[in-house]
Image 1 (cartoon, rainbow, N blue to C red):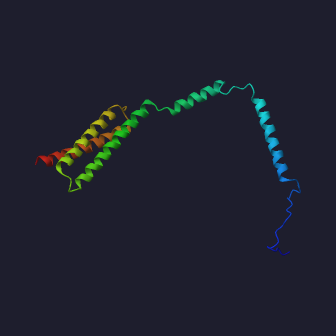
Image 2: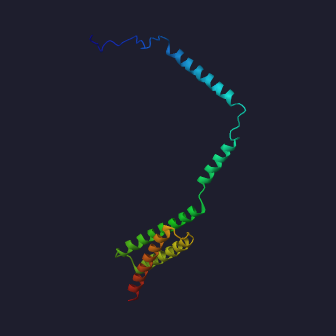
Length: 157
């Protein structure tokens, strides 16, 4: 059999053989859903959401897990101060490689680096013993001290 694309097929019969109107099928589905919704409402009457002990325990557990603990807050503050120190150290590195930076600007960058180091060390002291973040912060502080000493040693001579 040859299909001619010029002639559109006018009557398509579903495979199931159901020749009913699609609008009627949609109404049947809507009525079925409405009936289901009414049954669900009837079954749920008198049920208080959150009235069970288990529900209360789950909600309290979720609230506890979303609120940051004291250690998380301390670590967040410590990481923030460490990031600020690294940003200042980047400024120092860029200033070292820039010949157009004058002494007063370089002195300001070194002073800022020392100030950020002191803030980071005060945040580090609040962390508990054995925290790995303390080792990272100590290494950064030693690096800043070495760079500061090199700068002032070259400045003096």
